[in-house]
Length: 80
Image (cartoon, rainbow, N blue to C red; front, side, top):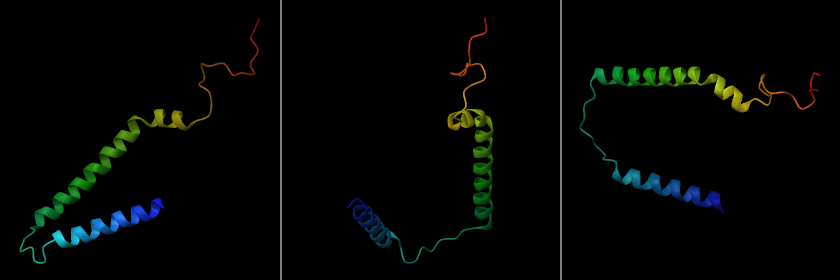
C-alpha cells in the first residue's frame, strides 16, 4: 500500500513539472557555464573525499565490532 502512494506522488510531481516547464526557453548557455558546472562537480568530489579522509577512523570504528585496544576483553583474566 505504501508503494502505491510513493508511485502516485512521483507521478503527480512529474505531471506538475511537465506543465510548469516552458516549451521554448529562448535561453542561451555560454561555454563558461559548462566549465563552471564541471568545476562545481570536481569541488564537491574533493570536498566529500577530504571529509571522508578526516573522519575515516571514526567511520571505521563505528562499523567495527572489535573492542578498543585500551579496553580489556571480557575473557581476559586480571594479572596478579
